[in-house]
Structures are given as C-alpha cells and as structure tokens.
Image (cartoon, rainbow, N blue to C red; front, side):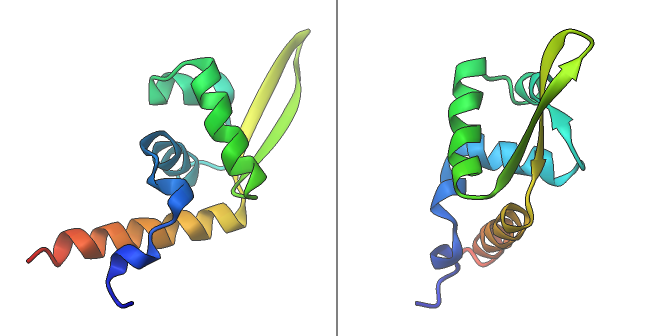
Length: 99
C-alpha cells in the first residue's frame, strides 16, 4: 500500500474534526466558544467531535471558570498534532499527484 490515501487518519476524515484540528494546530489553546464560532457549528455538534478526538488522545480539554462563568479551553495534544500533520501531508500529496 503505497498510495498516500492509506496515510489518512479516519478520525480526521470528518470535515468538522479536520477543521477543529486545523484550528487548534495554529494556536496553543482556545476556548470552546471561539472555536464554535470559527467553525460555524452548534455547541452539541462541536462537543461530539471534541469528545471523539479527546477519546483518541488528540485533544486536551481543560475546564475552569472566568469569574463565576464556566469555561472550556481546548488544545491539540502531541498525538493529535502528529496525526493532523500526517493527514494534511497525505492530502497535499494526493492533491499534487493527481493523474
């Protein structure tokens, strides 16, 4: 199996999860609301995708408070960063080698 599609990560094939990983790859940490707004998805949809990536060890979730309001911050864990980079590189290779 030498075709680069074999290097695609099944978890990151979903457009929202890929977008989520891409957004987190460009920052150290961001809050849930900022990510939700940037990705233009609902709270529940974003929560589902975060959970899938968190369960895989790709995303770190940190909860806390700002004043009396609960807040959730997200960051890309090292395995998630490696998976995103490999997935992105495979997509670029596929796109550049179109026959």
